[in-house]
Length: 261
Image 1 (cartoon, rainbow, N blue to C red):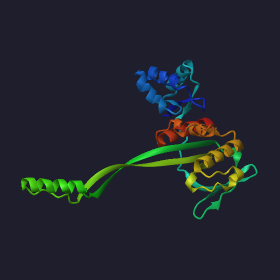
Image 2 (cartoon, helix red, strand yellow):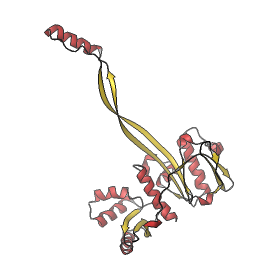
Image 3 (cartoon, helix red, strand yellow):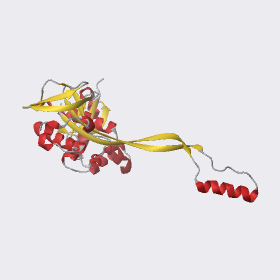
Image 4 (tube, rainbow, N blue to C red):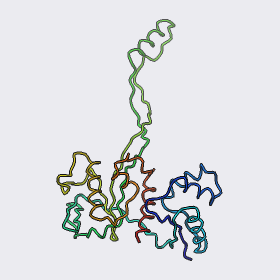
């Protein structure tokens, strides 16, 4: 049996307060819980509904001021693994990507074929437990000697010992994904040749990827923009996009690609 989703119809999203109020009313939950649900909805107002249920939910959403439509879940495209690309050359109204090892040029891709540009800057914290050898300080050795001389009781003189420590390792994942009907190409600033930017090329990766996003947006104005891409192009703080992890990015991509269809 075909199942249906209710999608937000505006690719720029909705006012968080309006969205949270909608989820609170629909789910019958406190507004605080609805705010978290709304934060991670990424364009999906309801999922896994019958067609009649979906039409009803979409009508309720529109009555609440949220532009909404329904789509069968088999029309919400799955996401393919991204293909890392190492460079780009503009050839008239087409783009030629370099990918692979060694890098080779793709067939020209019409800029008109671009459907979605998604930028993300994600922080990933990993707990790492290490065993280290800790040597005693001079003060600790003197304290041990003082106790022994005063009491006559032999104590440890502060030799080395193994200690397990847990530390946080932080990694930043930064990328620009470029979607066409044929797949998903990923630009990672540390592994991309920005020479095609010419005079727009900058010294730093973030500025280069912003310049590249601007070039692609101008070449393909029909392509939808993820929230992170809009934040990037508008020069806002990158952490204001609202992505907590890759799942958030992928869910937004599925929503926007469904709208692009």
